[in-house]
Length: 478
Ligand code: GLU
Image (cartoon, rainbow, N blue to C red; front, side):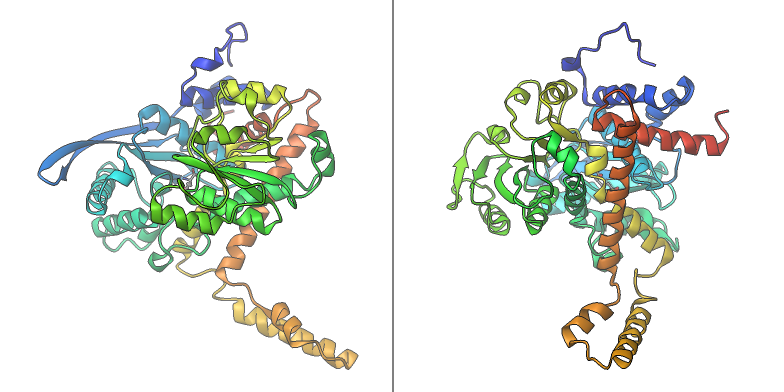
């Protein structure tokens, strides 16, 4: 239990200290004994590796990590990031967040995270492939990867391509392993990936916000109307998460008025055409000079523009005690991991901002990773067994209605009614259900408390309670 007499200086917390601080804040609401809380909070295994890689004529030593935060459920799960910011503290923080995230959305994994300290943009694909394969080999050597051990996935700076390299290396080193394809998720669909994984985190963010904004009373408290329709949104980051969030939230009637990228932000009160901007950025490798809307050179200042919902979807520690006082958003949804520091959070909560924490709002990625892993272990695509059966069943049903009423159902109606579920339909439906259920758990927990607790504290408490229950089920703690 944190000593209540010791005042935490929020400004000096490292990233992993910040996660521990949130944990400690929620722990008193769980009724878990101290020994168990200590076990849940601690990082179980930390593997730091250094290995040589050839860059043309020279050899460079690469620093990399894999951290397994909690083994209360196996396998452990979490992405691998490629960035120059990677260090042990960051990977530990991200691994811990994975534990709480998985528990919160009932994904039966422990938390883990990996990181390689490189700049993926400044590294050639050939060298990136060498680094990825060597990293995977190091994980195999130490038994740190496998469908029942630890299952990596994409994160900042990695994607399908890297996951395919990891898979290929793993199955080469483990020939004949029947479930080998489940050693990594976020794979290309052609390599036993799953439809909908690429956009899953962004789609999950939108499902979450749609649910959050559906409670008229909660919205009234922060002076907003019910629903996503017409909401003015700012997104930071046009990477995988930011791009899909921005694209999908428009389908719900929200207007994305600004996108902040590393080298500048684009602002347009009429709403940004996300695909157009994305294409421009892909071609020019920058948002600078984008002809539609206003380009703001000081990108981080775009987070301070007036809006209803701010979605930081880039890296950690973007909103600190320095810029928090100037943030005008009524809702901040942490699509990235750890984008708000605890010192900033204190300021924002005082201002009445509704903060939707990362461990809930960005859990869509790992949720669909779980579906992918299930698909790999079952060796069958979702929907394969029942799709035709469902369609025949529905067709018979419509025929019956037509026979009984003597009326004909229009063809377009029939087509939409009989459509049997494809993999993507099931994935999106499972994802939506997960995001709704988890929010209802958090909201109910928060409501039950007499004292006011914030959403993050409620989310951590719900999560800790679920982990506590798995430990009790194991019989380790009395
Ligand atoms: N990197 C993602 C996250 O931070 C996804 C992890 C996964 O799918 O295992 O949640």
